[in-house]
Amino acid sequence: MTRIAFLFPGQGSQAVGMGKGFYTTSASAKAVFEEANDALGFDLARLMFEGPEADLALTANTQPAVLTASVAASAACAERGLEPTLAAGHSLGEYSALAVARALRFADAVRIVRKRGELMQHAVPVGTGAMAAIMGLDLTEVERVCAEAAQGDIVGVANVNSPQQIVVAGHRAAVERAVALASDRGGKKSVLLPVSAPFHCALMTPATAGLARELDGVSVADPVFPVVRNVDAGVTRTAAEVKPFLLKQVASPVRWTDCVGRLAAEGASTFVEVGSGRILTGLLRRIVDGVRGLSVEDPAGLEKALAAIEGKASL
Image 1 (cartoon, rainbow, N blue to C red):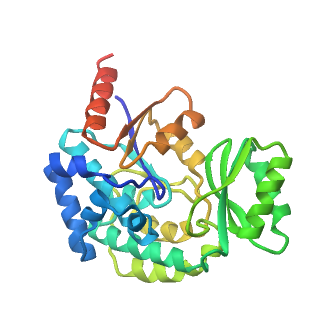
Image 2 (cartoon, helix red, strand yellow):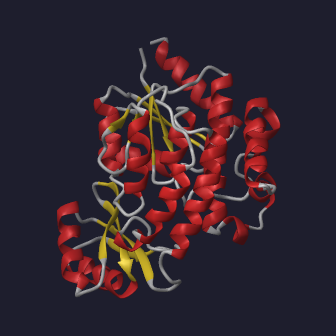
């Protein structure tokens, strides 16, 4: 039997028009958009479908939009019988995974991630922090580069996206020093990223207290399928594990390479990226060999995924 892992994208995958195909073709997906609008008290769906792009790119809008697109796409998949046996999400995408696994109620999740976006944005004054992608150096070398570049500031690993694509975050000057050092050490390409805050580093610690207050007010349940966590690539199987690791995630690196490896170790052989974009499908090929990667961001993608999975199942 094919074990299917759903992968849920994070911030950066958003695009105007995201999810509209499912809104118009799937009753279950449309209900997800309507629930998001009701939970937030404004027309998130219209912002997602029509923009403007600058408003969609605001962190407090991006996070609920990406979550809603993923949960709506998952609902459309479920209508056609495509459901995961396990899952993981990249940063914000971990909330999508937990919502689809019914560990978090969707209305609660969409409210929490909007607040999470605000808290993360306000944790660091604009212009103080930065993030950069470092290509061509392994994790140990990037950690060494960060230690040398800090010079009293904060800079550290934020995302381990693949063995050769690692994102660092921290104070802008320290990140710039890390980029320069990485180039000196033989890194292929290191570039500052167009982000509004230095996510997943120690500078995000002030956001944790506010997020704890938001999470205190919601109930959680055991997930209906296992969810692999960003913080340690451990597996969340019980309600008791949900909140502590979401809190820790804010200021901790996203260990995506380890997450995908854990999904494969748990038996996943088909990976389906669900929601906007195909970033995680692209990374998949650089992390594990011999697995199938599919993406479902619109109805055409769903049809292709179903055909591929049914074809594999009949072999």
